[in-house]
Every structure is written in structure tokens, then in C-alpha cells.
Image (cartoon, rainbow, N blue to C red; front, side):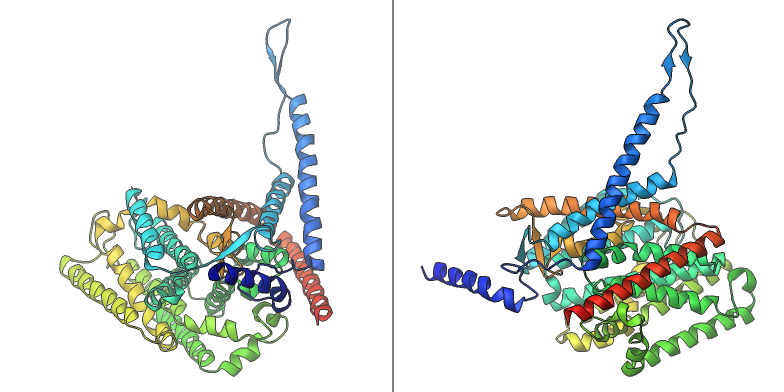
Length: 523
């Protein structure tokens, strides 16, 4: 009786209080936020895209019917008409925006329209560790041979991203951030993503020497397209999706470091110690800049509080959250770049044995490095599990996270048999890891990740299965849309690209003006 009265009282309080207080962790009994001008314009754009694609599809289908081969009744032979089977860029553009419009409508209904319920997270060890065991078993089951057996080959890095992303998703939905040992290990996974950013982009620029504007625009578009659309549709600041700003800024840091004079690439260096020394000087200067900004909060905030950077990196009126996120993994991208340089230098001098089934070094060195790696890996895990204070552990994390990352890389790559296989299950998820990370905010979790989306009330297990299936399908579809649009919006021809960039710059200027007008009207 008492419990029933207590629940009734809480519901009554929610009805009257939540409309006024608007708590961040409760959407029940809150009025739906009014649509902003930018959201209305986005809705009009996607509606026109859907209508435009339907008209295009109907016209194209009718044309296709008219051009179908027909049989001549007198001769019994087919009359062959020439049919253009190639898909036009306009059709791809309209189709992509049509699908994206429908997906964004689903996003809005899930997390802004108060159409679906949300539930709180309640952490237990079983809700985190049991799903982890399930996915590990599945991942091991889907083993395949790699196309190449180099260290951190493409299949292996996709696999690495995939299993890390799945663990992070389970971490978020189970509310495991309240359990400090799990939190510290997840911090290493986030750092490992950034390590791959440093490793991958450094390797590309060092080997290819391609510092052209097309490459930069392609990367920036693929990283930011979905987030920019969500900022518009969901009325959220760019910094809300903190990981994308992180990888975007670090990509630009890597690009500027290597593109500035003197441009030192593998072809130019070609075993010359002088050029290698010059590159190390560049990396040392980058490390010096990182240390300065990490320990000078005032200088960091002044840089990112300048307009228009402030529009991208402010959250709740200041850039402290951005400084905290950046500082938490400040060295790991540098570590990734340094590792790539050392590995590629050793590879060039043919120090490594990367053949199929061969250990990376001689047997004695391989066994010694494996032993050191396993000990380092376990030592870090013991330290992370014995953490008592999150603030102190976060302070040490930037300097020590690389220990477990390097230990994992060596354990995974020193034995030839381990380097020759990968999990296709994890690799598939790794290819859409960025979309999975971003989409979870609105169509898997809810209330800005503080709750869980409820599509099917009263049946938690079925709800998770259904919402997860839709969530993964949507992330995969958005990945395809992003790739298709990148080919059209970012052309290889520099003159066409510059014109497109001018249009994109004008679009963002208009967006910033409208955003400023909205902010003034709110205040």
C-alpha cells in the first residue's frame, strides 16, 4: 500500500515539477521542446528531397519501361533499344538525402518527440560481463585468414575497432561507468581509437606524401557529416558528440605537423638519417606544444573561445568540457605517430619478418617481448582495477594508457599465426564503428545517453533485441550514405572542389548566423 502511494506521489510530482525543472535525466511529463528555425528548415529540405526522389523515380521507371526490349511478332526477334544503366549523380544525391530524411525522422521521434518511453540504467556485473562473453564467443567463431600479414593490417585494425566499439556500447547501455575498474579499462579503449588515428594518418602521409586538399576534405567529410546533420536535426551542440571533435582536431594536427615545411616523407627520406632526424624534431615540437596546452588551461581556453571556434567547442557556455576531454588522452595520438614512424623505419630496413606464420622477430626476441607484453598488460589491469579515486587515475591515464595499447599490439602481432587470422564478425562492426558510436546517442540510448530507449514496453529483452537490430541497420545505412555523398560532394577536380567548398563555407556562415539569432531569442 505504501509503495503504491509512493509511486503515485512521484508521478504526481513529475507531472507538475518536470515541466518547470526540466531535469536532464528525466523526460517523463516534460513538454516537447519547440522546433527551432534551423530544425524547421532541415525538415523542409528533407521533405523536398523525399518528394524530389519519388518524382525522379517515377519518371525514371516510366522511361525504363518505354525502353524495354520488345519482341517483333513477324520475325520473332527482339528489338534491342540502348538502355543507359549507369546511375546519375543526381539520382544518388536524391536517394541519399531521401533515405537520410527518413532516418532523421526516426532519430527525432526516438529522442525528441516524447513518442517512446525511456528507462533508467541499473548497473550489475552480470549486465556488463555476460554480453561481453557472448560477443567474444561470436567473434572467435567467425575467424578468417587475412589478405596480408603485416602488423596492424586493414582487417586487423577493423577487427580491433569492432570489438572495442561493441564493448563500449555494452559499457554505455549497462551504466558500467559507476564501476571504476571498468571505467579505467574503457578509457584505454577510447585512447586506442585515438592511437589508431595517429598511426593511420601518419602512415598514410608518410608513405603516400599526399597532402592535397581532396584528401583533407574527404576525411573531414566522412568524420563530420553525420554529426553536423544531427546537430541541426536534434538541436545539439557539436561538442555534445565529443569524440568526433577529438578525432577531427587530431587529424588536422597530424596534417599540419607533416604538411608544413619541410615536408618529410618516406620517398624523400629513403634511409637518410638527416631527414629522419628532421621528422623527429617535428614530433618533438608537437609534443612540446601538447605539454604546454595541457598545463596551461588559460591559453587553451583562449584559443578555443575565439569565434567561430567557440561555436564548435563550447558546451553550456564554456570550453572546459572540451579541455577535459582533450587533456584526458593528450599524448596517445603522438604515441600512435611515433609508433608508426618506428615500425615503418624497421619495415624499410627489413628488420621485421612479416611472412605468413612467421614470428615478427627471432624466436628469442619474440618470446622475450611477448613475456614483457603480457606482464605489462596484466600490470596495467591490476593497477586500473585497484584505482580508488577517479580524478587521480584520470591524471595518470594519459601517460600510462599507451602501455596496455602497445602490449596488446605486440601480443596480437608477434606470433605469426595470430597475425594471419582475424574475426570477420568484429571487422564488420569495425567498418561502421564511428556511426555506431554517434547513433547510440539517440536511437539506442536516450535522454542524452542517460537512459535507455524503450520501443517495446514491458519486455526488456525483446526491446533490447529490436532496438539493437534497428540501431545497427541504421548505422550501416548511414555509413553507406556518407560514402556515396563523399564521392559526389568532394570531387577530385580541384577547381570544382574549391567551388563546392565556397558553397559549404557559405552554408556554415548562414548556419552560424541563424544559430546566433536563435541564442539571442532564447535569452
